[in-house]
Image (cartoon, rainbow, N blue to C red; front, side, top):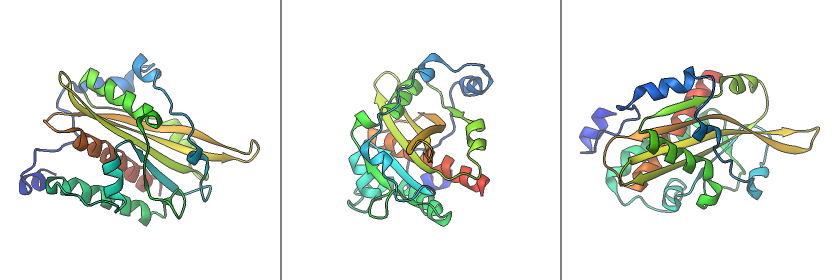
Length: 228
């Protein structure tokens, strides 16, 4: 990472927090999560959320940055060449998903879906929380992840990035599993993991959005490698 940033004359884009690391560990050590995380709003179920072409190994990214979705889906060119390294890394992560046999939600749809912020309220909420505590953190539901082993499910990743004049920048993501319950003839969603990234260098909102999606993709690829 450091070498790439140096070659491209970029700030040191790192997903490692240099601030209050005690907060990151406290999330795992506490019996209960901070109230801001407990009160995280769930986005409403979108009409497309319950239309999966197959009950397993389908995947979708949801972002509220239209340019980010269009570039990754090949509908728009990347004009800022300083962003090329992070887009290469995201593309490689998406290629890894395909290597593991994961496909887009429907064969005719793009992997990255753009929706308005109303449909991305959880990641937006987590961005604000991360800017408030000024530290990176993660909340992985290990018991839920373990319970999904050997079952059919699809995955949905929501990500967001944000800026504040007084609190700098942050990014966040949530990973959700969608499982078809035959007895109820409906899709049920379960949150598998979520995290916030405290960005410790000056950037714009587009870079923050990219960091949020990349961080979620990195976690997902590691999860699939561990589950394989």
